[in-house]
Length: 627
Image 1: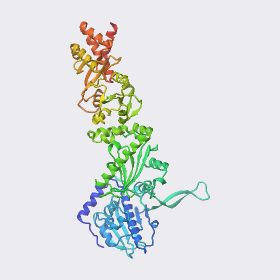
Image 2 (image 1 turned 30 degrees about the vertical axis):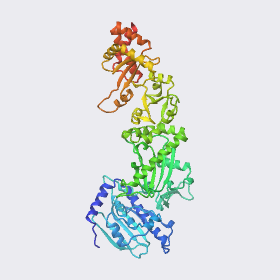
Image 3 (image 1 turned 180 degrees about the vertical axis):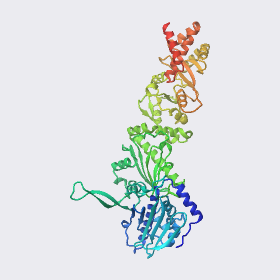
Image 4 (image 1 turned 90 degrees about the vertical axis):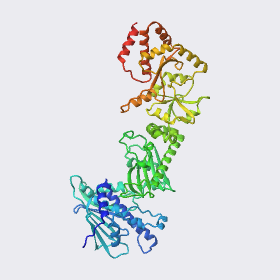
């Protein structure tokens, strides 16, 4: 018996696959089961036109057998089998695709699903085996053949005996070493879990004899070991069932068991699409964010199947980052698979499916926002930040897709509102959308600048998340209405006459403000009187794109370069403190400086900013109180 050699390039590919391409050894069983399913598909297809084949679809099955004593795991099928020539062609040359050669245009029209590249997937067996035997008898043939290989050195093909047609693949499991425990692939519970994980939705039953402990008949405490034949896979995935036949409870139970969540999902989306891409999708929006959702450790992605065979546990390409909270499954027969089924080609089909899924998720969220506001607000509480980041990231590339899904707290409505709802209530002649930012709703509500705006019956959006102002800067406007911070120096609700009067006053006390600016040693860009404060003595406004809150957020980041906002200290001219400053400026420059420093410290505290010299400010206040 002469051993045949693999071609040189096949030797290299075998070594590369075993040592590099397959990072997860478990998937060898998925590959062999998929190949067995292919063989069953072939014979089933042939039976549709060949009346001599006395076998119905329900007769087809895949068998797994563990022989712990001899360290073998066998995968058998009663499919079409292989001739000597087919064994040579399919297994003698790595990456020879039996399924591809078999598939015809007629078969495509009959919608017979055949997946896999037999040669490449089969060789994953060598990740866990030091010897592989393939015993096969082709349907309609009288002779059977055995293919045997111990790896890249080569293989033999010899005649053998086999009662029925089909294929047996016998894996001689490697011995354990320091790095790997291979005996786990001889454990029936491990094999059952692997089938459930990767091949649960293969359309043929996967059977195995499983030992169970049962109470011996006629006894109360004596047990005996009983061997039972079990089907390990469910065969029909829930996402391929008619939606009318699946209860909400069934969808919820599947979600909780599949994605290890103790709560049912907030929203279930089941869809089937035909056209440029054909696929089933079962998507879930969780009712709460995972503990690591906003951390670097969180991995987004949907489980990707090809005809019920798990290809990837988390295919990140199917979800944009801003919909990373979605969990679920996509099953398609249109995907182009390359060497291990683990590595998906970045093809047009995948991109098209991803685009459709994104659109579907967005439509469902919009529908929830419109028809079930309470549920949407619950969703937004958990995942609104993800949408905000989506609008802000990539220089606002996706802002138009997401802006109508964003919610912000309204000073007038006392609840979360959309931009569209804000616009519907804008006062006649109002040109801007007003907002204010801070650590909390209560703190923003107490800002002097906000109080004045509310008094004039304008609505203000309260921004409490650190990303909020960055989002509005990227959006720039909504439906032509620009966003304006009520703490910005250019914000002004005064009449023309009031503005002219204030301008004259500020010119009159220009020298006083210059001295105050000098006393604060460059902390502020300018000092001036304002009418924007109702009963409050002082506030800080900003000039430029960086507000006080934005600077606070950016400086909290782990970066070397710090930023600062251009602060302007504004003093309420109509408050008694205004007259006090005018008097001190003329009569007591020392006290004037003390008042200036205390006012600036007050303004910082109101904005939620820290004071660099609290002890000094405390001493100044005590001195002033003692006078």
